[in-house]
Length: 374
Picture (cartoon, rainbow, N blue to C red):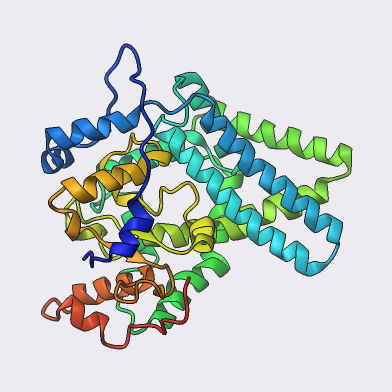
């Protein structure tokens, strides 16, 4: 449950709202489902619809270029330094930026990275191809996730079940070890490798062949240029070892412990933290403002803070939404608000012991030292 903190609210939601230009010929849509529209009301939905237009047609390609440029620059610096520590640091950071790129592919899935439908689709195919996936399987899977959130068939919910996320956990350390570290060491890289080298059932043969030809051409060009080893070290290793870990961590923050409530308003978690964690785990804002995204999936990522600011003041049920401060540790600036990992453990524990209040569980052995923030 949200705990009021004026300073945190100012950091999260105080944004200047630029003037929006209406898109000629059609009414913008938030993409909100029927239950969410009933919860928010027509007046609030109308206000949020104004945030679903006015995003410039060159923003999406520019975002892709920035992330790819950061990856190339990181690899160049690591290769120039020529030491193992620099290479390891580069591999880790490139995996983070690949997660940023997957967030942009997510924008393509919701057809909102650019206004042009063909360009949006082309960018989606390009981004998922370089990330070793098919665009069609991702789009279908994500659409099912939104349609069946927390129910049988929801890919996210089923991933939690298959990876024992809902099992009782006595401490934060054991949760991180069992649910994150052990999965990072084997399960996640194996799944990523399988997705990279195989065709998903929902991927067309044409798409799979195109993806294979893309990678064959890229590998051949890298070999001819004498940088095939660099492609392996600075793209494939982060893609298979690091990006899945970052994705899994952010996926846990999005829904773990709340996904099966059956209430579309409280099935998704949001969070904030200091700049470094925001950059590493909250690229392009979707994970940090995930409740707003699930309510109104057509709002572009840059406008999610503005939507949250509107909802905070006008939506009566806003205090019920799970919002956290910090990911692995509570922040010094908001010591009374749980971090994401704490909140997950608390809510999973509450599922096992429904007669124990959430506040009592939070205060019993789960409060980390306020001197640590992440």
